[in-house]
Image (spheres, rainbow, N blue to C red):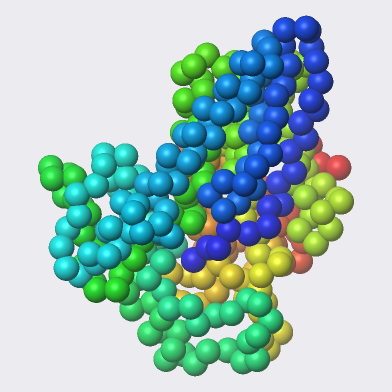
Length: 329
């Protein structure tokens, strides 16, 4: 469904000193196989570095639970036992899967963590010379379907009904990690910061100069051009884009974001940016919008409370949800 892509969100963080005691501390590093940027406001270097270390430890902890690459993770245990038996999992993983299933129901299956079961028949590395057959496409998704993820709340178990079925958190995992790291730092009393998980971003408070954090929606085909600016103080934002991983057949551009219900790649959208209070939710909905298309995606977002979006279509036209306030350049 979604292989995490090049990010079209550009965050402008001006690292400057307000007083001798209040500064922004920043660290860039690789976590969960992607680039992370962690920024915190702290009174001194010791506190700033400690807060960042705490955030990193939390992100690594989450990766150890949800990674499908690690054979020792809870997620891998669930996948190994698909079609055989339920697996008891932690409350944290159980609740994450439960929320994912609820989003699947809300989006009519446009979002589905069982997308990991999909046969990889589409190649976006330039090696494809023709479209897969309709039969092959249909067969590729026979093991996909959130309806076949069976949860037992009393026993805290997860059962994948079909042998060979898998779940994966590529579409929400980094957003979830950003949310959890933010919550942990807030509980420690960190007054402001940004957790930018390769574009799955959550913010709180303001910068050291007391200005809001600022995010720009960039032109998908010209990253030097910013379409619109947005101020963030306690918001999450996620952008998904298709402009680097795609194939083109018969004049139609097909993206690497695949509809888990049909096996066909989405088309018609270059990027989708979703704002909400949760990076996990924004991540899932950004993926869903790609699958739904511009008109259906906008209509869907406009029916949700506390969620807004910006869509850049394949003709580089911008589409805003109803309540989104923008400053266009």
